[in-house]
Length: 199
Image (cartoon, rainbow, N blue to C red; front, side, top):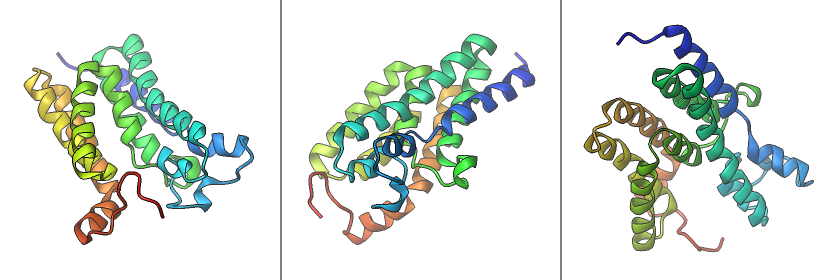
């Protein structure tokens, strides 16, 4: 079946607009904490928001960054079908990583990756969670756990008979790994912070 490229383009645009909402920046500013990009890693994601000491804000950021991906694919799928939903998932992820109103400097994408997966194939979230939790318990590295879980996701989707989703999440995983390049270098050097580590 030939996709309707108008619907695909609209899905991509819708996804990008939703994905580019910087929940970490918005929530910390509303809380009177200033610009979250001025602290820690300078990232707008939940991990850096947690460095403000406000666990509730970090949790809200994680939820917002995930659900904007879910919302994008569900709305686009309802309006334009499966191809539009896939395009919206890609758009939401790109919007989070490269938001135009923040000079294309966004987050690393883990929460939005999960949110898009939840909207397109909820069972895939279970696979992601099992891999992440297992490695996090074993290695105590959040970044390594997320990288492994993202790599396992397209393999699982292919095994579940979802080749189109597998291709999409292969692209998202590659982008996620690229955004985690500093973490990968620290992991290789043995300097990456562990879960629960102070300082």
